[in-house]
Amino acid sequence: MKLTAAGLSDVGRKRGSNEDYFLMDTSANLYIVADGMGGHLAGEIASKVAVEIIKKTVNGWITRNSPEDELFDFPDSTLSKRGNYILSGIKLANRVIYEMSREYAEYKGMGTTIVVLAIMPSTVVAANVGDSRIYLIRGNMIEPLSKEHSMVTEQLEMGLISKEEAQTSPLRHILTRNLGSSDTVDADVFEVEPMNNDRFLLCTDGLTDHVSDDEILGIIKNGDDPEHLCQQLVSEANKRGGNDNITVSLIFVDRLDRERQGILKRFWHFFKK
Amino acid sequence: MARVILVFNKKVIKEYPFDKENMTIGRNEGNDIVVDNLAVSGLHARIDKTQDTYILTDLQSTNGTFVNDKRITSHRLHHKDKIIIGKHLLFFALTKEEEVKAKDKELDKTMILDTVKHKDLLAKQAEKRGMEVPTQKEKIGVISFIDGSSQGEIQLTKKLTKIGKAETSEIRLGGLLMPSTAATISRRPNGYAITTTGGKTVRVNNEAIQESRYLKDFDTIEIGSYKFQFYTQESEDEK
Image (cartoon, rainbow over all chains, first blue to last red; front, side, top):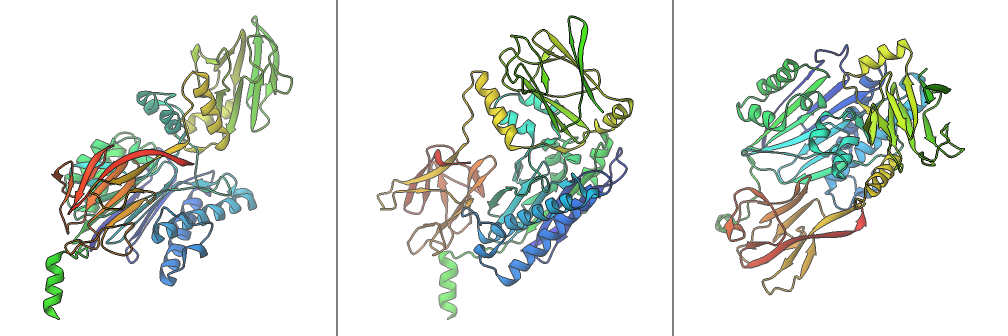
């Protein structure tokens, strides 16, 4: 399996500082993006702490091949082992940020969103809390692999407001979940089978507030260099106002030599013996 | 500090400084802002403060809550907003400093709002509007074998269900020509999708699929001599 990845974080046009943070761990094929919130430097710290904790703990569990019942908090039986590593890493990061914000006055009210993507030849794990997103671009389709935890999304799902109202609602930046505001958190985790030529996008709302899903698809399909495409996505968001920090990370999947135990291959193995 | 000024018949009745995390408005004595009028519900509305932002939410009141003449469910309050509850007017005011700060915040600042309480609230609002209370129950996919094999029905509880010969498959299919994993079904934000892994033709409603495809209720899936139907049912578990 060959992955080509790039990431870019931009302060945007209206903000004084960048509270987003991202990480591309190419040895574990782990990709993380976080959008911090909270006064002074707290937002920057929250996003960085979350990303680093998840990276360290998940990699540690992978190395030790830890059993699922030894992780932080209870494992989720609907997930694979790797899915549980990531879920547990997110829960641990939440607890740490929550404790930090209670312990130190300067960190009061700090929090962050998180999106985590892990790519293995047989499974892709996508996890999120808050309103940052993960997209899968496969063929000519773009689809979310994350769920938005905002008031507007909940109102929309319950049919209290229309889709049009949701797009312009003044409440669309009010989250119902993040890391750091409560002692426990639940993440949405999805698992899919990767295919050759799959493209994954991780991004913060600085992109999606300005650029629609279809426009994102158009940009990503129109090129093969993830680094260049990241720049295009960021400059598109900036062109339209750049109201918030913008972070994007693109991962392209190629040469997926999935273990294909079709009949021919098995015959081949048989003859080789 | 923000203030809420209660006005009736063009006369200021009382001024309330916003000195806590949230304030409730209603006819009952226990409210922070008591509005004594029969058109006002016992517990009518609530204002939550999150950082420097104030959010007004109608608490399934009988006669509704209006801001600047529009009925609201929830609303982010701005300086000089006029909240109307029954025949009373509540005037929302910020200090100059706060107003400037709030203007900055208008820049789509992300915030977090608690949470469990709000969920209950939304459910109540839906109920009040005569809507079916949104169920917290999830829809879960099931596959039902219709090929005469003895597998019967299998619930797709996993996020990723592997189908094939391998012992680790959630759904095991036998046969000489069966690959260790012939297909997977994943549960994604938009629904269940089946993906072929390439070792063997997977047909959905008699059509061989390329890569992946979303499943609809009562789609028929064929892998080799196996044939099964997909459908969704309400899960017993709460979300």
